[in-house]
Image (cartoon, rainbow, N blue to C red; front, top):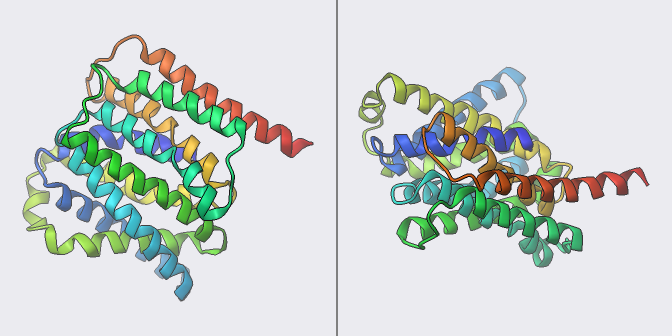
Length: 278
């Protein structure tokens, strides 16, 4: 799950620099269409008939993911990569509280404390000049809420599903649902240029193929609340990419923010490890 958040952390800058050339619906459709092709090739090589329940699980999870990715891309038109990372983190942390009524997984006091630390750290890490809830921020927060619901859905669906089929079905649903709104895909890809092509390749392979598969694999073992907390590492990695590749600048308080997020993760995961040993 940590590896997945690392890969997703790099997508914020890549999306920010790509939506100025390609419309959000086109970008999301193309990156998941590429992912669906990759999963189809893997499935063909395995020579297995996909189970209907795995395809249905992917459709349910993919519907939530569709809304999340589209709203995130649309929100990045009007907000910074740092603000988007914070709001995405804030929304996915809600997974622990959605899992309480939906899965009867009541968050422990330690988990709530870890979530509070991660939320405070994410705010320090990502927000540079205060958070004004404009159009971009509201769209991003709505998308993050859908991501939290997807975490809860995968907590129920992933343990008994084939991860390749489930993740591939997610990608296929997202691409198919957005295809009517994607416009001229060939012209959009041609407009990218060499640097844009590399950014798109990263979004398609790392952000839309590998990272979602790692999440599904992680959710076969971890409860929704801990997955939501581990998502808080995403803005840490997003800021690292923004500082280096994205050439953004941030105040010195981001070190404190990163420390608070890591403290929250270590608190919860350390307690879970101790409980397992006992």
